[in-house]
Image (tube, rainbow, N blue to C red; front, side, top):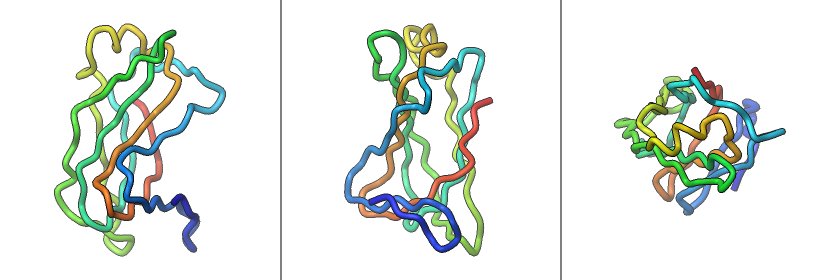
Length: 120
């Protein structure tokens, strides 16, 4: 379930694993970008993953999972999660200029808030 918190953030609560959305006004060009980062507050500490669907065939392009390693809450502050886009396969790297969808994964049965998604 996606819900807005009193603080104005979006909170994801689900027993599912993958969450995603088509990119607004997509596809977008991510060529030349090497890192995708977002702020995460997790109720349990979590392993997180990133998948982009790229190119004319919307190829499934998954980065290595990142272990956040500890629990954070709103009182402590968010944990910056960083994905290395250069770790994608060569066919995925060739299609970074044609990004259609972004998926994030979290451990099941946790509550997660994400904010400040940036690509550098």
